[in-house]
Image (cartoon, rainbow, N blue to C red; front, side, top):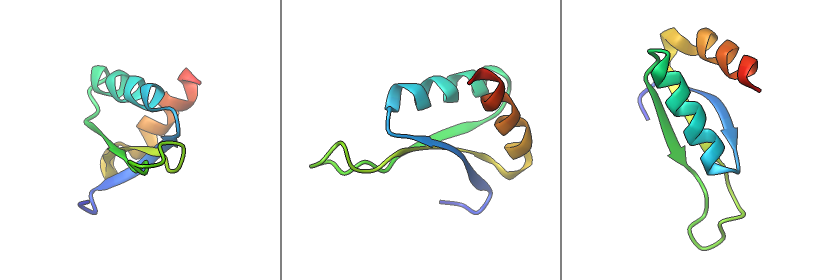
Length: 67
């Protein structure tokens, strides 16, 4: 992944990460989800949420306020 994209959140529950991605995008922050779960063992690994370097602080504050 490009060095401009920074991980701001990860979880094992994919729908939660997807919901956060949508909320960030609704607030004007480009976000990407990267599924790092093992395809054979879905309980192993996490789903990661990335934003551009310029939006890291704002994204983390928003995610924290939603939790």
